[in-house]
Image (tube, rainbow, N blue to C red; front, side, top):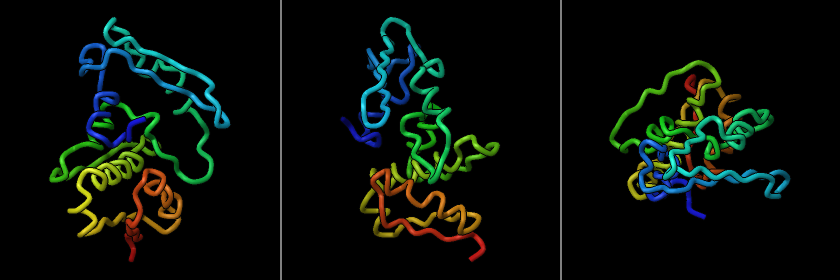
Length: 158
């Protein structure tokens, strides 16, 4: 297993049949109640590219959202990965309709940057600003679930 934030895992998230990035086969695993429940393999070297036709990906995207916000590592798409892994010095404005993944992409970007630039960011700190305390409570466990703690949160009204 490789951490999703590691540079080598970028190819997994960005590879397509048209641009395989050295990936010959991409495998996805589905789990239910802690047990392996499904398995898919894409043969990128043979032009196979499941994309959103992946049953595992579709099931994960369609999974009901209950309780705290979950991470999107299992569902991240190439365009989202490009935003998450953009250079530290790039300022991004992520726009979209409700439920399109803006917050998830932003939190994954924070986790990726904290992983990739630990000394620089942990020294100065990271602050997540949300519209209200209810929203911040909803997203509070995403960064710790992604392996990053010590991030401060504040509602924009404070």
